[in-house]
Image (cartoon, rainbow, N blue to C red; front, side):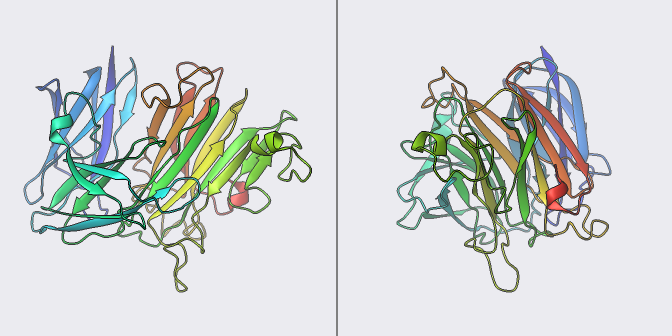
Length: 378
């Protein structure tokens, strides 16, 4: 089979970077070369399936390599937008915190490994290239001093899925945070949204929105509103006062919301990045689920902030354990990653999912539009 790889390149301030040379390798051999256009975009078609390693290079910038898997025939693989660091960057100390993706609690004793490059995955053929640099401390914090450049950090602890985080050194870079998801139960799905500290959109607060099928064959909109954060199937509403424990646990819930009470919040500008949010579907049902990301901070002034969502470096990770799957085996569960398109807008339609859909059931939407009211996202 074959597929297409697309992506975008930016300067460190989020502006498009044209004229970047890209070289794509598969199994150690160069299979394609191209150059980013005036919008920083690039695309390459008719690429064989497998794990591709894309190298970015341009005079005046540090080069870097990003690795991703092109796995199904006809697939379009949308790479994470790359920000190239100017070659006057100096070495520094990277630091951050690891938290529980559902509860927000700091996680101590998390084993940390690092490798050069972006989007690297710990595998049997590259494990010697990873370096262990210790464990998170009692408040979930880690730090690492490295030469200027991009790195991938892999975090793991018993009972949780391994987490990967693209981090960089250009002087000292704090708050390069990540969160880990506890192993799922059969039939459960977790949707994780995160975005880093990113210039020029350092004040942006993004929100998760999920439309779900309910018991009345209609749709329910799960988002940060107090009356919409949780949906219980036993009552077909957001409340479940006399429910049993089994009924209480059968829900769709926004477990973690980045808001003014989040750890990074300040009185002058609440809920500044880095941010992360988590939605859990305790039991996936028939019907169509739809997930979107809304730029809440800039929703009232779309004309001035139309590029902020595209430049936010946001990403969505979905973990799904279908019934009959060994949920403790990370290679057995279904994992998907989504990145926003290089387009204007305040509302990113990310994906739809249906158990009756083809393949894994996920359909990538990857469109941008404008929406001012959170309640009107769905």
